[in-house]
Structures are given as C-alpha cells and as structure tokens.
Image 1 (cartoon, rainbow over the protein chains, first blue to last red):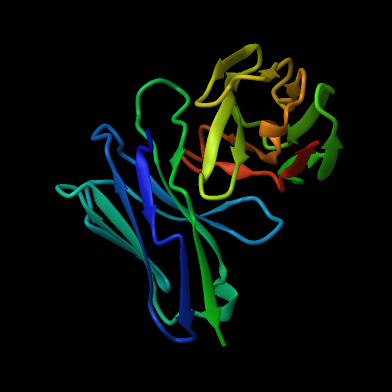
Image 2 (cartoon, chains in turn purple, red):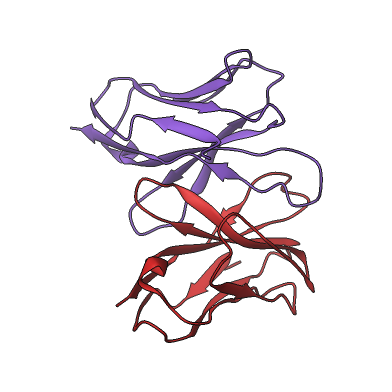
Length: 114
Length: 113
C-alpha cells in the first residue's frame, strides 16, 4: 500500500518557468511533510518542510502548498533554473513513538532546460 | 564533521554471498535508518535504530540484519544476497536537536548477479 502518491514521474521545464510536483497521502495521522532533493550520485537532502497547521510555506524560490482537507501537498519551484535539475521526493511522517520515520513518494525527475 | 559516511560506494555480489554495508555518523545522532531506493518506488525503510542496542524493522526488512553496538555505527548485513536486493542503499541519521530532519549518506550501489 503506497501511503504517499507522487506525480508526475518526470517533468521538463524551461528555464524561468514554474515547476509543480504533487503529492497525496492517505494516513491522516501524518503531521510532517518534507520535500527532499537528490542530485545524481548523492543522497537526498532536505529542501523544505511543512506542518499541517499552515497552508503554505515559502523559502526563496521554493513553496509548499498544503491542503489538509484534500490530503494533498505540492512543491512549487518558481523561476526554475538548470541547477534545480534533480529528483524530488515528497515524504510524510507522524509523531508518536521515538522514531518518526519517513514514508516517501516515488520521486519526480525534474529537468530544467537552459 | 564528515556527516554520514557509507562504504563501499559500489559492490557486486553473486547470489548467495553475504556482505556488510557500513554506515557511520559523527554527529552524535540517536536515530539511524537504512533505506533502499529502487526506480519508481522512492525510498523504502529497511531497518532503523533509536539508540545503541535498540533496532526495529521497517517496511522491507526481509533478507537484512542490523545491529547498533555504538551510537556512531549502524551496519547492514545481507546474509544471502539475492538479485531482488540489487538496489541503491542509503543510511540516514537524525538527532533530537534537528527535530525531524534526516541526514543521508552518499549511498551504496549494490548489484547482485
């Protein structure tokens, strides 16, 4: 059972355009929603994260939009740059216990054309 | 700080062979995890540890063993490698002060023939 569904699988955007990646989750106990960025040959690294008590979080060109009632959240990359070309993973976790492990989406390979 | 380190970077095994993937962190993090990454499937949790001497299973634990004798090290053992274990393996760690952020190592690419 895939608890976090991510789309699209791949995305090609022109330089300066807006990249949008969507995720949907099933478990209403999730209360932390991060996005990770992964460059080829590297491990994922935290990009931005949101909690469900806010509907939007912005850090520079990166924005998370969160819709609690629809159980969906999305990553928007404004003014996309070739250096943003990477694989992006959404994830979710829930509190309780001590581990707070992440459940990941399947990933989106973003290519920004110069 | 070196962060999270993993060795080896690449490994080729034959079916039935055993090996240990090494993971170490120098951030004094309590929590450590092993994930495998397969195309189109994201990262799936294999095993995790909340402290030295304490480990638990994740989503896909079969065929893997772990132990945590020190805070720094969290090795992953493949007892009898199978082609289905061909994957990229990532180790991650998290500390209490970092709240939810997990720090990932550079990965080990494993091929089982």
